[in-house]
Structure formats: C-alpha cells, structure tokens
Image (tube, rainbow, N blue to C red):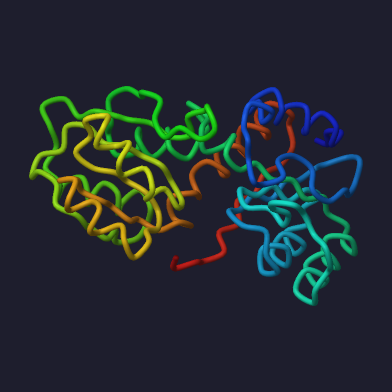
Length: 253
C-alpha cells in the first residue's frame, strides 16, 4: 500500500511536533523524492552505506535520526556529499530526518524506550535543551544493583556498555540522554540521580562523574539511538499502511 509523502511528513509533524525544539539539525524532509511512498527504510545515520542498502531494499523514503544537513547548512557539495546525493536522486529516494524531537518523544523516543527497556518505573522530564526536555529520569522500585543494570543495557543495545564514574552499588534513579549526553552529568546530580545513561562521552566526563558520585554508563552513540528510529518507522507503517524495513549499518561508536 502506498501513501503520499505529504501524509507521511504530516504524520511526523503531528507525532513529534518538531517546531517545539531549537535543534541544530534539519528536521523533516531534507531531500525530495517520489510523491508516493510504498516502502520506508529507517536507520540511525544518513551515510553512503545506509543509502546503498536502502536502494537495494527498494525504499522510496529513507528516514534517519542523523540527517545530512546541520547547523547553517551546506556551503559547498564535496565528493562525499555528492556520492550520497547521487544515490538518493538517482534511485530516486526521498530523505527525511528527525533528531531532538525523536529523542524526546515519551513513547517512540530513544530515551523513553531506553528507560522502559532497562525496567525503569515511570518517566520524568530531564535534560533541558533551550527550554525543552529531551531526556528522562526513571526509577527502580527498591533499587537495582549496578551490575544488573549493565546487563540490561547490554541486552537492550547489543553491546557491552562502559561503566565510568563512581556511583552507589544500588541505583534508584537513572537519568537518560541518548547519543552524546554526557554534559548532563551536573543536571543528573541536581535531580538526585545515581547515574546517567548515554551513548558516548568526552575525555573530561569520567572525572566529572566520579567527583559527582555518579555512575556514567556509555553504551554507544549509535547503539542508544537505534530504538527510536525503528519504532518511528513501525509507527508510520501501522498508521499509513506503508512497508517498513530497518537497516542497521554497524557503528562501534
């Protein structure tokens, strides 16, 4: 079953409300393609391998978390961007992206799915970005041993997380900001969390976490952001009757 791309874009706007966010990414349609969409390919990042696999899967629309265009936009098309665009335009396939609006969504978002996936009880807004929260705090009734938490994170993300910092043996409240959320350590401490679950960290992050008495769990930028985009594709398939395929291009970071 096919759906007009206008309906798909309208459903993305209705569901995620991207206008609420001061994002440094371009949300919504980034590259036009067919007017009628039968198959959507979702994945974490817009890169050559993603586009090649989406074309092989005969997708009409590629929907990603990390799109091609950021900040002030493109001032020149280099060789890498040209190769990516050639596949999109030559197939043809449309490209759409949803960044912070997908991180923040309370049911389809990366952070909500991470919280539920590790067995958290409830969601509280966390991780303020220009007046809007993009992450969540979750709790564990009676507390959860940190070793068990790491096992749950590994099972959910498909990779061994890195434990940094110096938090308590029992975790009662956990802050979650997927991707590159290590800068929310101070906010996590102020919120009474015992740790912060994120994707990747900077060199300074372990010391900040240790001095704050917090666990810092780095589970991979890519790995912590596969959940939301896949759920979003399934949501569109269910609402609009299009086909959906999730394409996971391996990324160790």
